[in-house]
Length: 466
Ligand code: SAH
Ligand code: SF4
Ligand code: F3S
Image (cartoon, rainbow, N blue to C red; front, top):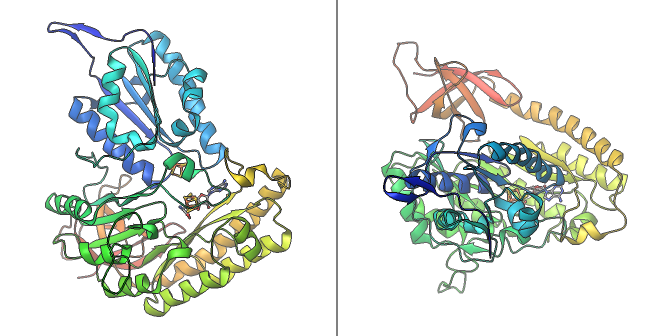
């Protein structure tokens, strides 16, 4: 759907040509959005745009937005306000809203911010060039219709030269009653194992060492692909995919996120423990420690099942780190029910936990309930939970003291150029000197053994073991 507006074509010696200047992308939200932004940056560079020095100097600005909670959504409006003012004095500025707010608000966003040139949902990220070409003909463009996601044929401009995200499944078919993702990211679409392996082969050839497979519900991978094995099992599961991609030479580490407890199988856990490149870090949100709330959330598992998954992981990979998401203040949540989430945090001892107060979202069943909790109750529960998380995460952290950890050097520490930084297999950020005691230098991309000497809440430091 298009609406006409003044043309922004510029006169050049060859005739009428769109202006190619500098671009800026600000990314909100999850890894899915970060991966989309990298692909959009790749498309813009291929088109001839150069990265801008600053947001307020760019000729083309993309806000890749998130709407998971209301405060995430509101952020983008304040950013847009500044750019809309700038557009009055720099009419050539191209202003784009991509991502989940774009999908949710669609045409309403164009009406609310008439300075916008393009509003595009996440399924359209790979079509950025086509959409910008339409903008160049003087139209205000809206791209939010359901679309089959075309294979990523462009070269993403990745932020790291060592670690890369690889989407394996887009969208989500779950119907968690609080969550806006299915309505903004659409139906599940799995990429074929061959397309995924092809992308990983290309990454390995470019020198990438670590890949993170991405999906909102990654355990659903392959449900929409054809194929049954001789034993009657689906032929394309996450487990099969891990086996299929494991032999790519040059790739040293494989991660995946986000896992859903409903579909997290014992077979997957066993595969992770058997395949040496799969790192011992599992992000498995539990959302609530109370079975009645889990049912009202339509999560499809009990907290007992969740605990069995964690026990099995720890049985096979005792050193594994476990992280999760949890929501406090779901409609009707009683104090006792909240306490059960606290008990789970205490009992499991997470390495890190993303906590959030429930936020009613458009087009979700839980938002229509009459038993919404007041803000002060939600804030109070969040504060109590965060205090507990801090305590338990600190205890977990202590296990690193004196340990030798394998670190993949990802970059130079921006605050100290004598140091490298990377992560443990368990995903803990770690800093270490570029040189060992014999004055040998190490570089980005190296796997280095580090003895951990200092422990901070979110990072570790140590020295190279030779
Ligand atoms: N696909 C993942 C999570 C995606 S959203 C999963 O199924 O676990 C990331 C996190 O945001 C969720 O795990 C949840 O904890 C939180 N979240 C989602 N909707 C929310 C809402 N309406 N209010 C508060 N937190 C929410
Ligand atoms: Fe949202 Fe549930 Fe899908 Fe996760 S699994 S994205 S929480 S609907
Ligand atoms: Fe946000 Fe969209 Fe991700 S709503 S969390 S950016 S899928």
